[in-house]
Length: 353
Image 1 (cartoon, rainbow, N blue to C red):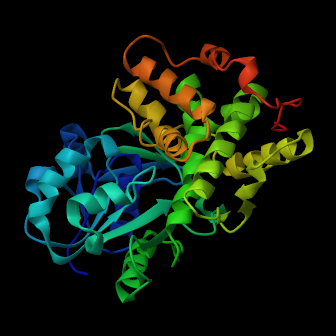
Image 2: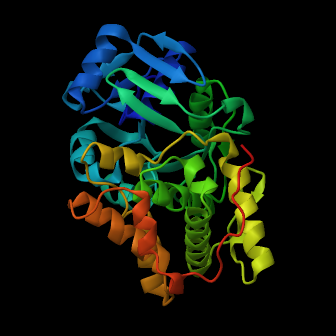
């Protein structure tokens, strides 16, 4: 695969592209943020946080894309899909691959634009924050992550091309995983997107702060239970996350099993305390979020299969009201989760700081 692009170089896309460039694999880094692109053209991509390096990169605006691409990684917000794919379609050939690394469960929508045959999906098992034009922060110690990405075909079995995409991603410098049953992995990642990320956006806090506070952590656990119900209702079995955590623990029905689910979250977020949700980063910039594609997807699945999703519904409501200027992201928003919604609450603080 000779001609590769990353479309959507916010924090995650910038860090992926910077590592690939640093490790000698050419990639075009495409983003609509002109100030960010100009900064990378002038001074390279600077990555801070758990690493610290600056590397020259090939940064471009969408209108500067040229020719047909063999492989395109899409990391834009799903809210931008219509504009993104309108521009991208003219740069795709019959055998081009579009691998979506977006949040939520974007593969059906992406296949609607480019066709199922050209669609591949992937989840990212690490976190990042956009700092300023040209600068992104890696918020996670990658040495503690068993694999960086999990990828799979939207339709059909793993093929030679799937393995080739994995090899491209591994130019980031760490292993990636190929799955022959990928969509359950999307639901596993949706647990993280909707729970820690949902509460981070609602309250304006980091993942560590979500887990440290007993009430926000209890909200996250109840959200996770709704995600698990959605996965199962779609006829799928929730897989082990990152090869370590059994997410079926969120089918709690008593105090002991609820506390076990809390412990699982405390372990998962132990390596990403300083990170904050991309939805919160969007709210900080006054942008529309993907909440309707993340927590809203769980709510829609509940509507489809006939089960209630009060916590996801509440996250969508609060974040939408923040977007509309009716609320601010604040810890005060946790009071909007009424006592009657909870089956269980936390009795202990969480992290041992």
